Length: 393
Image (cartoon, rainbow, N blue to C red):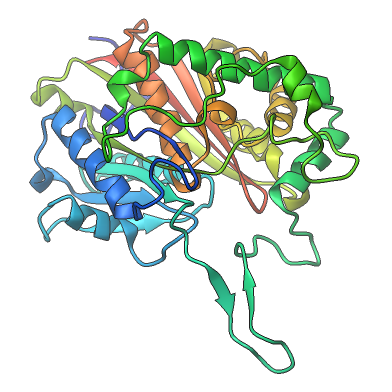
């Protein structure tokens, strides 16, 4: 048994005892015909089986979702998974941070004593995201749009890629450095898949168990040939940015006391988390502000002590700019590759970060008390950071 982080008693200390995800599919790819509930339900069932908990023991189901279809995806997915109607569900939307927000919300509910057992995660289907349109109004004709607004025009509401180009320019992140980071992500993901390090965390969905977007043959030369994708004189390309994706992830979060009573001996303990806002025009550096806020609140947390870091790779430029600002070596994050290689299913990505940490720290038997973080930048200029610790119960 190792000490729990902080000063919470075991019946208020959140721990993760099971973590599963689907393979990550390309938009229009292996999961193109699956609505979100068909993506989420098998993963939710698998995580309960791994935790050896029946759905009747859940206090709530919390899922993140960003691109649609609207309604309460968590409730729909819960019922589709065969959970009893008595088990509620709530869907949260912090855009790219939705899945991590769901995990943090479950942990905070446990810390507050509101419940003991939660299934949290996220799901996204870019393939099945609804077409969006607004009706005619006054002199404005009916028109379609691709995403909701994140910020008023008086402040600026740039598209993600254009914002990444702004970050690259403002923080002096070169094209060469972005491409090198992207290539490392592809190589790491390729090696991790070949070594079977994704196998235990992937639940078969529609018979699929292999991440679709990893580019095993990517080279520096191929990356260098790609043209700027978002700005004529920009440095962000389709090679150093993430693709559009479908996927789901779920985690079982309970108290340390309950985990022990269920016979679990290893768990990923939650230390704390923070959200913060930044200028929407440089939205990719949101994790700098959220990490600094978390460190200010938890003075015993130190970035130098991290053994693992999962940082969502929407764009290499914003990851590198954030790492530089925080003083973190760029080789630390995403030791098995990140979203540039694996993909970024918006509402699920934050939860996938924590699934990856669970594999690296718990399934792969990291030393007790090893510390790790998950970080993600969010449209509209926000960041989320959560800290965890491997624990022997």
